[in-house]
Image (cartoon, rainbow, N blue to C red):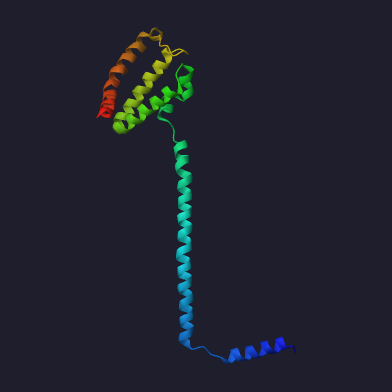
Amino acid sequence: MSIDEELRYELRQAAESMHCPPHLDERVRQSYQHYLNEKRGKSPMKKRLIAGVIAVAILIPSAVFASSYLADDIFGSSEAIEQRGGSQEAYQEIEGMLQTAKAKLTEVEFKEFKESFKQLMQLKLKITDENGIKHEEKLTEEEQRQWRELGSKLAPYFEKIQGNEKQ
C-alpha cells in the first residue's frame, strides 16, 4: 500500500469512530436551511424586477406605435387626405381634435359626434379636388341638405369641445 492509501484508510477509520452530538447536526441543518431561504428570497426578486423593467421598456413604446389613429377610422389613412390636396399637418390637426373630443365628450356623445363627423368628412372629401379647393356645386341637392344638417348637428359638439379648451 502506498502512503496515500494508508492515510485514507486511517482517516476513514477515525471518521467512523467519531460521533457528532445531536444538537450540532440540528444547528448545521438549520444554518444550511437559513442560507437556502436567504438565497432563494433575494435572487428571484432581482430577476422579477429586471424582467418587469424590461417588459415595461418594451411594451410602452410598442403600445404607442401600435395604437391606431382616430382619424384612420374616418379617412382610412393620411394618404386619403393627401390625395385631395391635404397635408400630414392637417391630418394631425384632425387627429388632435378627435383626441380632444374623445377626452371632453361622454362616450355616447363621442360616438354620435364621430359618426356625424365621418359623414361630414366623406362629403368634404367628395367636394375637394386634388389641389385642396372645395367645389360645393359637386354635391347633389340631397347631399347639400345633408351637409347643412350635419353642420348644425355638429355645432354644439364643436362648441363644447372648443369651449372647454378656452377655460
